[in-house]
Image (cartoon, rainbow, N blue to C red; front, side):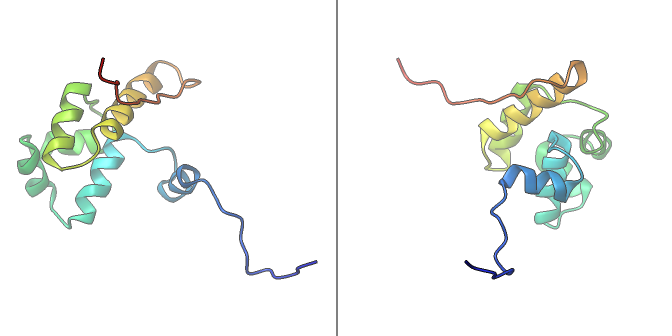
Amino acid sequence: MSTDKRKKPIRDAEAFLDDLLGGPMTFGGLLHSLRLCEEASQIDFADKLGISRSQLCDIEKGRKLVSPKKAIEYARILKNSEILFVQTALQDQLNQVCKPYVVKLEKKRAA
């Protein structure tokens, strides 16, 4: 029997991020994290997205929600996952109405 206490159980990445961020990922939190990784100011990041600094601030703080169309546009500009951006934006919208549902997207297969 092993008594090595250095080994820690592997945690789900989503649960880890929830703990790290103080709650589930939001679209605003996603943009905020990407902005900080780029070490960009709100003004520079907003210019990159084609919006005003106040709009970016409202999105980051959760005061303004983003449509799936805008989420795709931002994902393309930031060269990031469209599925992640749309899924997170839709989850924010759903959370405003009711919380017991989770949005999970997958890419549509070609017919």
